Amino acid sequence: MIRLRTALLAAATASVAMLGVAQAADDPNEVLAYRKHVMGALASGISNVFAVLQGKASYSQHLASSARILHEASLQLLDVFPEGSAVGDSRSKPEIWTDWAKFEEAGKALQTAAAELVAATEGGDMAAIGAAADKVGDACGGCHKPFRVPQQ
Ligand code: HEC
Image (tube, rainbow, N blue to C red; front, side, top):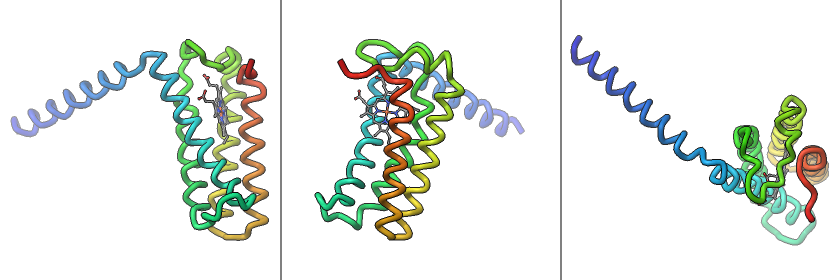
């Protein structure tokens, strides 16, 4: 009984320690750097899908894994915009946080489009893959337009 209690206490202490680590990393500049890497993963996934679709690269065997990279990154996206992280050279507009419901909708639209792209790549029909990839592109623009400061 005492052993069990000790074990539970040790587990609780460990999880509190892990929480501390997660919070220590939450410096807004670190969040911004992390966010850029998530966006970079999105860009890698969709760019490589388009490179194959447009015949610039012949790695058609990578279509499904590129789509999955994109989908996984899309699932991280909404986590990496905590309030107060529009620091430094961030191009995040304040509307992200004043209109979070709309931002969340734009993030979920990308997740749906990315999941549809994964399904299309598993089917292997190039026309369907192309249509799904275009929808992903629309979903990127559907958030960048309202929520990202245009490049100077
Ligand atoms: C829900 C909103 C949203 C969606 C969807 C979205 N983005 Fe972004 N993206 C942003 C915002 C906001 C920024 C600016 C982030 C910052 O600088 O704080 C950004 C920045 C970027 C950047 C620049 C990163 C850097 O290094 O500065 C790239 C590249 C990018 N997005 C690619 C994509 C691609 C590709 C997609 C679609 C597959 C996508 N994004 C979908 C909101 C979104």
